[in-house]
Image (cartoon, rainbow, N blue to C red; front, side, top):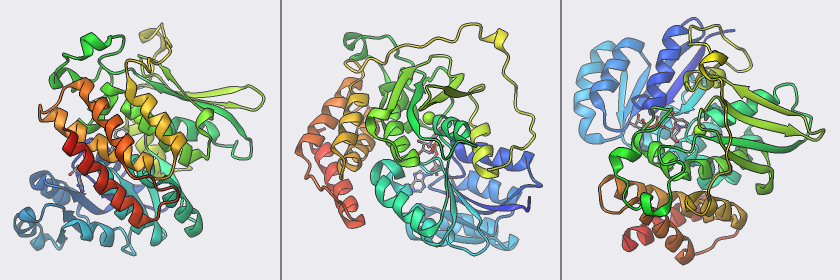
Length: 383
Ligand code: NAD
Ligand code: MG
């Protein structure tokens, strides 16, 4: 295997930092060409000094001076602003783009990378929620592969190895259920953001941690799975599995089910996406059955956790509606994190936005951009 040269968008986040620890362990397989961060200039500088990329981007232009002064003497190019993201992913020296940035901000740079023919290791699920049809069509036209990083989708992708010609009957996405599993709506009305930010099994960025507590994360993953694996909504099931050991399952047309198991550690799916089709030896902790003698499964509670139902509804409606759902969700999660609304009100604002937004059946990129803006306005007004 020749060394793969990586652009890591969002290198200072949870996925970004874990990806860099994979790079350190697998330094004969990977090298870093580009690192980007939104506002954490100090960590970006530290990472750049260690990994010596060709270029870095700091999203928030107010930090440009600081990053430039720290890295210019080391011959590392420094850029700032959103547009720079779309330029650095197109550099000739980049082989794979890992999209580890959070939210809608991933869409435009991911499209730019696809247009330049770069393979994508996709952590940023929001890109496929917002514009899955457009993104997967462009990737197909360009002969670009999208390798899933999300643990459930990586599990399914791993189960499909050697089976790509066999039709899928259905897939089953596992969900931990988050910190509020089993609670009723009365109890949920009073949960705090500190409680919501404490995920039982995974240590992740704030947005996805709130999404996990509200089950929106699983809703976004249902939509992500549709586009990654070309499925109909009714072929995608969700089952709650509190131990997060079975990462997801595929059922083929003969009824046989394959699952992928392991400890909850994102470094494995990150490494698999970057090294595909190879499996690299590593030092990650190994799973022991005796530590988990009981693996359990439950039906998700769609009445209490309305967001998962809202996501299925959005997927069934199609067009720009998943984009609207994503935009409104980004607004409500931020409002919840800023103590502006309670936990249950997040679903209320989402439902209201979905009802009021303009429907576009076959959106262009411009339509998605307009829908995102409209949904943010509607949700903000409601809050
Ligand atoms: P995070 O908040 O820890 O990190 C986000 C990164 O994106 C940071 O480097 C930040 O600087 C950058 N960023 C934030 N806003 C930006 C903007 N507007 N423009 C450009 N860059 C921006 O998030 P995370 O938990 O690492 O999640 C990243 C993505 O991976 C999300 O889409 C998430 O759903 C997905 N994901 C994460 C995990 C996990 O375990 N953390 C698991 C599965 C999928
Ligand atoms: Mg996941």
